[in-house]
Image 1 (cartoon, rainbow, N blue to C red):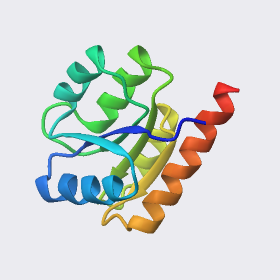
Image 2: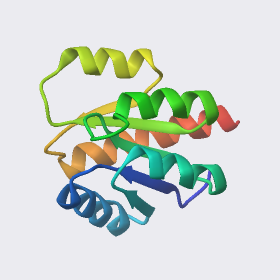
Image 3: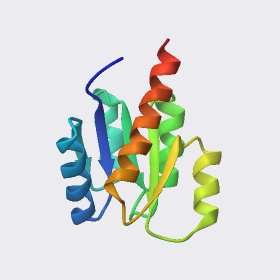
Length: 128
């Protein structure tokens, strides 16, 4: 199994992006972060990533729109959606559009790391 994963963090909130970067980098992941979905899609057109952690509510293209685009153009890319709102409809819609997992803000590092591990194992199982 691949040992280092490239993770993209997409969140319009600077503090949230920074926190997630620190958590993930301290556990050996390579991390790039973006303030919006459009710049993330542009990055993905010429760079590889294994996993995206994306906020649902962002100005411009929403996380749900990003997820839909991602599934159309990068169907093998793993995506974890996150939100700080208690919105069951967004959770259902995320899974309907193909999200691998879902996490709520404020993100607890232990929970996030377990979710990422689960996604990595799913990724590895698909590669075999």
